[in-house]
View 1 (cartoon, rainbow, N blue to C red):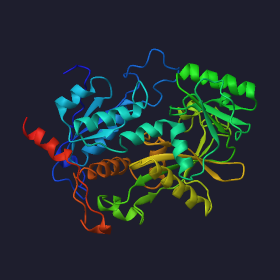
View 2 (spheres, helix red, strand yellow; view 1 turned 90 degrees about the horizontal axis):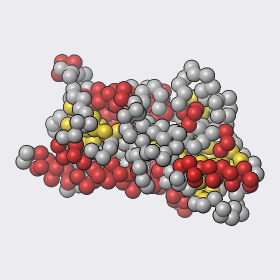
View 3 (cartoon, one colour; view 1 turned 45 degrees about the horizontal axis):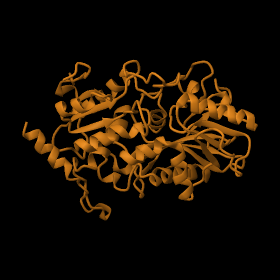
View 4 (tube, rainbow, N blue to C red; view 1 turned 180 degrees about the vertical axis):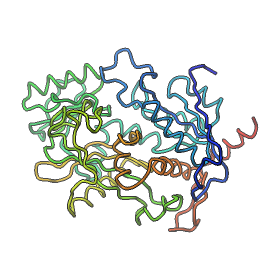
Length: 402
């Protein structure tokens, strides 16, 4: 096996582990945590200056492993690079905790899920097509628009010289169509005239080698809304009472106040690298002070956005108010960051009195339950049948024949 494949195995004794949660898997699993690591994953030679901004730190991966191991499982870390197919064939994990952002090419966040589908290995969070769509911000907005969900007027530019759509009005906001973590977003992203618009569009196309997405600028408050669950989530959760009748848990809202940040009015890449206490960091207010019916409207809109692209189990949806105070969908992250005390999802969950272990295990068990790896509390609960794909028994047979 290639020496770049690194394993971090559990060293905890059984006596160190807290009491087990229920519902329980029949046996302990070998869980592969798959991610791109900052400073270790090779970046594209022609990539922009902020390439790799979405990658995880090794400390985050180790904390995720510790959380999984605390419930009796073993873990192994596998880098999300070209050696992954060989590592999967060698290690044969029962399930993968997927954090991989991808490195090259179109729909790169969908590449690892597609490989896991090919190998018939279960994994967490959304599947192939959803991850491909979510990374393509223009396609996501088209789906939301066609579903009747509110989003700002927009237009995608492939060359930079296309005629401007009639429904767009200045000021406008420009960003790469397929990036995350605020990449390509700074003070120059807001433009007030066509000359600045064309200059910025061309800059995005040339630096990021992808289309530029132009949106009507939304001047109102900005929120990040965490989504957790699905229709049958309560049947497999250690804490079924947290889920409402539709199967989703309503987390408190996080408001991002960028008015005095390093990128005023913009939650851009530079702002997203700062920690609480750093100079010019945005204010992160959670729970946000939002009155009804707006609060419920934001939570319900995030769930609708999540379901519109068939996202699964967990996501993070960015919403901003327009000049009239109407919520508009901006983006969805189907692979939200998992850095303890820093990533938006973790900050939101911690404000809701979840500890880090609970966040990680909830995502793991929701994912595993989709593959029949956990028995539901009640096979007839809510009248929803258990759906077990055929590749789980096949994978287990492969393991037994080693």
